[in-house]
Amino acid sequence: MPLKHLTNKSEFDTYTRQPGVNLVHFSASWASACGQLNEIFEVLVSEAKGSFNVAVVEAEEVPEASLQCGVTAAPTVVFFKDGKEVDKIHGFHPTDLKTLIMKHTTEGVPKPAEAETTEELNNRLKRLINTARVTLFMKGDRYQPRCGFSRQIIDLLNGLNVDYWTFDILQDNAVREGLKVYSDWPTYPQLYLDGEFLGGLDVIKEEMKNPEFVDKLPKMST
Image (cartoon, rainbow, N blue to C red):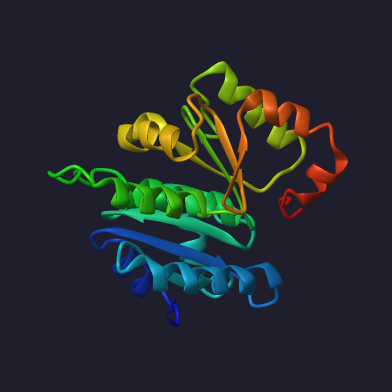
């Protein structure tokens, strides 16, 4: 699905003031990372079923919008929610992008009145596990770990420049309890690679000593 392009400040203002979650990608035609990011956005938007919107602005062609959002380099992605700027990502960071999209599109969404069936929950767990090649279920998130074990595994992953996505189990008790059964592992954090459960902190510490294991982990672009 082609992304919307905003060509002047008036279009930018109209787009960013509308209700819902609306992302603006401040792009530059000469930057290859911007083209890659647009391709990622096209996939995410097609899968999102209207939960958020994305528009592209050529940063140098609409300088008033770039100045308003404090954009100094491309790519920069600015998140607007119900007309207010709520988040910003500088650079090419697809995993962080997915994390913030999920955060802002699920905030304030009421939980279903009826409990999920085991099959529905397992299907949801499978989708969450496969959100990224490396997925970490933890207490808190990568920026604010809320227990010592979660902080330790975040430090390990960051130290190796691993590209990963996190899910905060404190925000969803069904996931917190269901994943224990799904993976037959009673504690957190839990780390997954390519949909397969790797283990908890102690297991991952040992695995990190193996160069072959470390080589398998996807790394952040630099």
